[in-house]
Every structure is written in C-alpha cells, then in structure tokens.
Image (cartoon, rainbow, N blue to C red):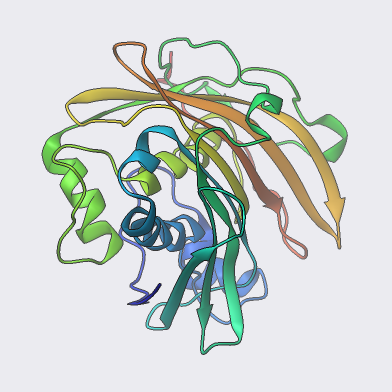
Length: 278
C-alpha cells in the first residue's frame, strides 16, 4: 500500500529543544534548513503499518527503521508498506519525489530476532535532572550506567493531540486512549537531554519491540543506558538500549536508539547547570 503525507514543521518542544530542528542549528550542522524530526516521519509510517498489520502490532509487534536522509517541512512523503516475503512482516519506505529515501526498514508481528539482545536497565522511578547535565566525548562516554529515568503523565487529551495535531494530521483511528507509537519511539531523545547537554543531534535508527498497548491517563517512564559509541565519517554516534513502562509497572516497549550526538563540524556546548535540581 502507499499513502502520501505532507511533512509539517515540528511542534514547539516541551522540554530542552534539539537545535537540529531549528533553522540556525540545522544550517550550522551543514543542512539547508530545519530538519523534520525523524521520529515524526516514523509516526506517519507507523500509521500506515497499523492499516496493514492491525492494532495487534501495537501490542506485540516490532519495527527496525533507519533514517537515511533529511526531510524538510512542506515536502510530500510517499510511504510504502509491502510484504517482505517473511511471515507477518513488511518492508517500509518513506521517500520524497520517488528518489530521496528518508526512512526505510522492516516491521512485523511477534518478537523480533534482535529483541533479546537489548541490554535494558532495571525499572526505577522517574527522577529530576542532575544539577549539572554534563557533556562527554568519545573517550569518556558513560557506557552501561543507567540514566536518570524520565517520567511524564499523559492525559487522554494529550494522547489525542500526539496522534493528530503534533503529527500534522486532522484525525486518528487509534483505539480510544491508546498512545501513538511515535510517542513511544520518541521518548529516548528527551531522556538523553534530561541527563546530558548536547548541541544538535541527529536520529539515525530505531529498533522498537512493542510489548503492550500503552494507554493514556498514566504516568509513562523511560529508562535507558548507553551501550556503544563510535566515530564514522567524523560524526560521533551513540547507541542506547531502553525500556518504557507505565505507573502500573507494565512494560510497553523495549528500544534500541542510535543517534549522532555530535555531528561533523559542530562542537559540544557547555554543560547546563540547574542549581534548583534535587
């Protein structure tokens, strides 16, 4: 199947903004303008996947997608979901003009082959940010150190906005009160900025194993740890493994999140200091 979506500008951030989604930050990193968040592209793809795989995918399905090229507001994105040849799995592709692929990958029902390889830290309550949100380089990446979990209460009204206004859509056919999968996929980025100070960062890949349908009127907590870091083409990459759960202790998803935490040609900013944090 194919659907087409016109990319809308990112909504104002609720936490610490990523400069890559603003004009100055993106042009400073070598792009022609502000980048549309890759996780929002994934949100449009996820809607198409649910049309094919059904709501069972939200409860017990997986996705492994890579962000290939930048996407800018106003561009029309063609989203294709096709059978992969393997049972209950599909290939996905989001492209502009039929040539510039901005996202591709594979999705499926059941348990992904890589799901058991994720190094997920133990669940713990959400915590405020540290007094000093440090920076780090490739030589001192804080690997295998559980990050301070980030919690947020999501009302039914907020869940509906996430599935419509914040994706630039007029309506949603999600089950009433269900959390949109792009919200779950997008929790890792604010978690990292809850713990550390970064300049512009670029989302590269998401591997997501859904374990239960998330619902509104619950506090949703995400925890993770950095499991790898490396340099490629002068970009600094990091890989985080994490988990998302609600206030009943129900795990909603496990994730592996790969990002460029210092793009080529940029510098790390000074640490953020919040004296009132406890």
